[in-house]
Image (tube, rainbow, N blue to C red; front, side, top):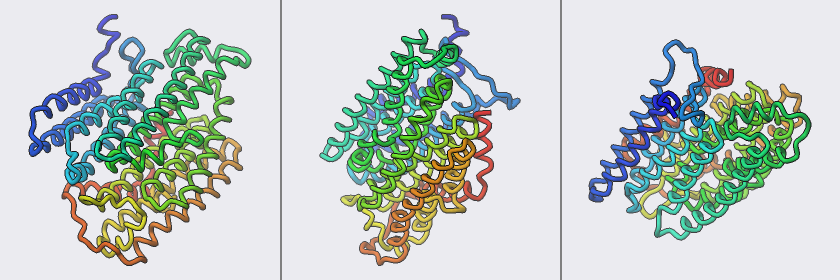
Length: 482
């Protein structure tokens, strides 16, 4: 393998992030608990440098080329650059939200940031994977970091239970995915995504082994995204994890999961679209039904947002079902905006939490407008966006995926999505009613760090601004699949 094959310059952000994670791990060992802010500051500084390195990979002449590194294992294209920028930014916001929460619970330790950085590295490897093996390695690096993060609060039995469920079910899903990949390899003789695509395209007629491999891969992908009927881990993990960990799981990994589906289904098995399209239709319909209907009965806010996530995954799948440039770009737009909305929602929960109090019940939002009109307004924007109410960005995201489905003559599927979106508005409006029309049971002052106030406000306002001016982000998503 020559140096040209390695082409290390393409993977500079990943290499830097790996060095950063190792440096934080070593430095934190020598820090006292009172100096733990150094770990936080170093992690944030490293993420800023990572963002700069990602931006520097944008070509000056605006002509994107598909750059390959590590002898075909790693790729850098517009999709990789945009999604890597998004996941680094999301993780940086999670770290801002996390600091005071971890301090109040005496779990402000370097391990949280080390695991978060290694999980981010796994996501970036997944996003740039050009080979089934590099995809799987990135996925496992992310998954192992998440299992440990869920169990991070060792004194909490709910967290330990959630981590055990997540680990067992995640291991089964990873096995399914790996088994599917092995079947595809057996029929094509390659694990390189481009070579698999060429080999599958040249095959004539239905190949039963290849279809079986596709089924196992779709099962593994569905579990990682949380689509019904492979959603059983999401409510328990969201509920049992520390809220900061929940905010991490609910945002950046969804973007990496979208990249994994694009690489594995659209790029490598695009010729089998007629087969995986039908599977995704079933997953999408079930996810929208189960997510929206069961969310109505929830009294715990984290579980409600968990079922909301399941319903949103159904909408993301709608764009993928279209199987064309319009559908993929709409699904990407939806994924990015949903990650932003979800992060804002959990940010409000973290804001209201304090030492000895989690604020994770819906009733804890009662009278929020009386306690803090500004952050009640931020939550209002987030909830309206999740419900798809204009002029928030959630409206345009839903409209884009519905339009993509209608354009492939699946009007019935769009009508199903609209119907269950209306069902979902019920539980979203209940949250707004509690914030604005009920008296506050807890009239204590809301206090948090200045940096969290600024970032949470920017998070909420960005959802409104993107709703008023959605064209720029949508143009990026369209250009990605041009």
